[in-house]
Image 1 (tube, protein in one colour):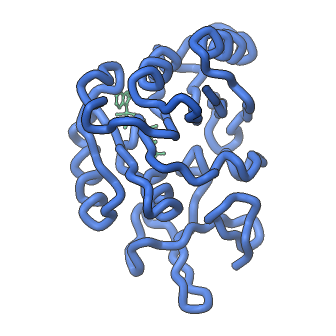
Image 2 (tube, rainbow, N blue to C red; image 1 turned 90 degrees about the vertical axis):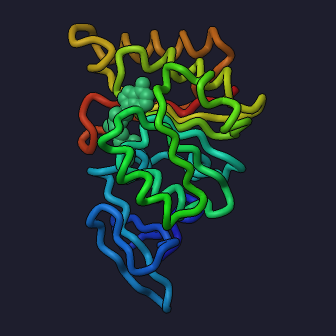
Length: 218
Ligand SMILES: C[S@@+](CC[C@H](N)C(=O)[O-])C[C@H]1O[C@@H](n2cnc3c(N)ncnc32)[C@H](O)[C@@H]1O
């Protein structure tokens, strides 16, 4: 097991791992590996867009440790569980609107005490902003038509003045017809108009088709 360019992530060849905060427990069927008496969990870029972003060559700064995270679209907690491994001292507020995936997310949070599930619609940040307070990392993966608006409204509600964000933009949820480059340009311009500067853009293919990851700073 070798260190990687991303703080807290380990590598064995091309495989990525995080140090398992709950030894003995695999969250989504990922392999567990022990090395020098430390247990690691495989982080699968085909299952997690954040692992896909690392596999696509994002710099170490994308995993700069935050003080607190707002995660929109947590689903079963696949990616959120790795954030919980990476940053044990940071509260991760995990918003999910679907009750069917919220139950497994709550079960996950029983063992991972830095994970705080919130059953809510990310289109209505006023419903949870008082619980979340201020965060310095906003992560979003909701695959909705109005993804950019959701992202900037949550940034307005909860992101610290010098905070940063990672937006997993599903281009085909915005429109079926127009080219990816045009959607990317318009999304960046909309964020920019609202004081959110995009300082990195990566396609996530082949791991997640029709997705771009945007790294954003206030
Ligand atoms: C692609 S899945 C997320 C996968 C997850 N981020 C991961 O990597 O483990 C998208 C999730 O966003 C949720 N979602 C979509 N629109 C939402 C909204 N407006 N508010 C909260 N969650 C939403 C869906 O219910 C779904 O669970």
